[in-house]
Length: 122
Image 1: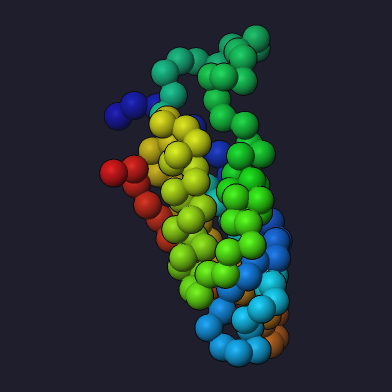
Image 2: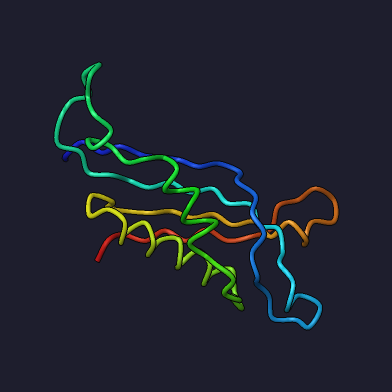
């Protein structure tokens, strides 16, 4: 098995237009994102290895924020799908992406309700 590198973004909160109920539409909701991207690597990481041999970690944050734009997503599954596809388009070395989204507005007693989508490059 080839070596892999996992890049992670944990508990990033961002406002996203999502929902199917009338009280949800037209205004953003806070979602908590945890993203894990598996990156194919081809070498060892020496002290002077350039960034081009890895992936900028901020790309994960971008996929969960600016890349979503002002689009209204009915389902958070669609949000996760968009994050996956954004990361695949950014870098051909991304082999797999896992996106966990927690819909913070659903919490009544501190529980975290949401979904996790894992997708391999096709």
